[in-house]
Picture 1 (spheres, rainbow, N blue to C red):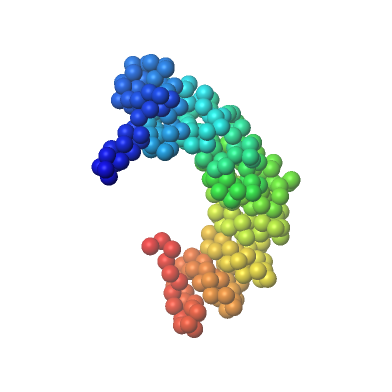
Picture 2 (picture 1 turned 135 degrees about the vertical axis):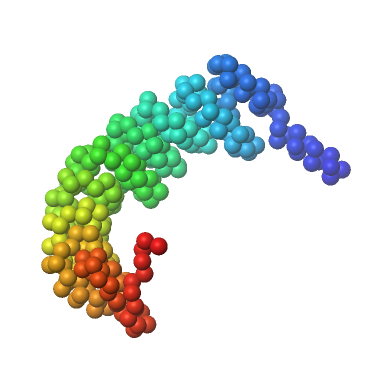
Length: 298
């Protein structure tokens, strides 16, 4: 009886979608010859999570490439969440620029779950038409959406810089933090002055971190001032950034920071002091021992 039940379960898992058996190999063969009906059916099956059918179809659609694109585009706005995610991911991997605007609409619809897939796909596609939706997503309540929007803007690189700089003046604290992180990773010199203007604002730790990424000596004064910030995270980021932006003027402030009450601030001050002076520097760890800072390059 148990064997019979297992056989019946297997049959139910592999059979009958809308009354007919799913013959994936036949659908694949027909799709390869350009059969539009087969291509459309394969894309529709991307929503079949229960039978794990989509995990077999997805890589095949990527192999089909451009031949699958029209049928993927038809389903970007589907209400089937599983199919929508699979379709958007496929279009992202295939870097289909004409999918930018429909995927951006998905990202902007805050009633939808797991929209971070749309943000990721826009970064993969790399079309500047997706930038407005990504900027809006920087302030998303879902941290995954905001995080992937930052990463996507970084992938767009200098294409996104002007838009990011224009976004800063009216940004919320959360949105500003994301925009600053993106500007730091992109590393465009146009960001220097706008970042310095926000060195005392709510995104101060992100600004210090971004200034370190820019590696511009003109940020040194703001970073030295940051070593005296009341918040230890801000002092840590300032000490960290001075490793790439500091000159001889930063040596004495960094030495003073090596007496900070927070161990990680002392460690980063020592690490940056080594970079600025070219000499090994020890710091006092949380056990009171004088040790070399751990190498971040190993």
